[in-house]
Image (tube, rainbow, N blue to C red):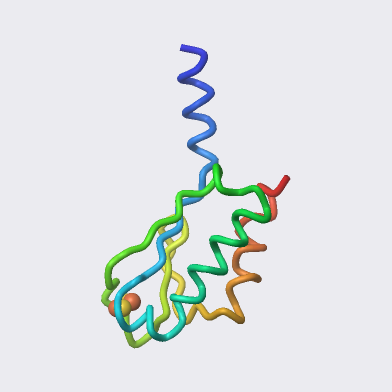
Length: 95
Ligand code: FES
């Protein structure tokens, strides 16, 4: 019972991120953004606090590259913007 409580509390603190890997977003920058995010999570010891996965086309190609963080869609995510986005999301989770 104790373990279940701890696990559910830990899970509640997790951030879920999905990055669009549809052909439009992928070719317009998400290919590089994926690599940046993976390295960012590793360097900041955030791997166990984040569920990071790829997604199919989100139907918003003209506004891409796109990603979703905890249910909020972010459009126009570029390599130039992603570090600032991640810093804001993880400011309270970093070790
Ligand atoms: S390819 Fe990303 S929204 Fe369509």
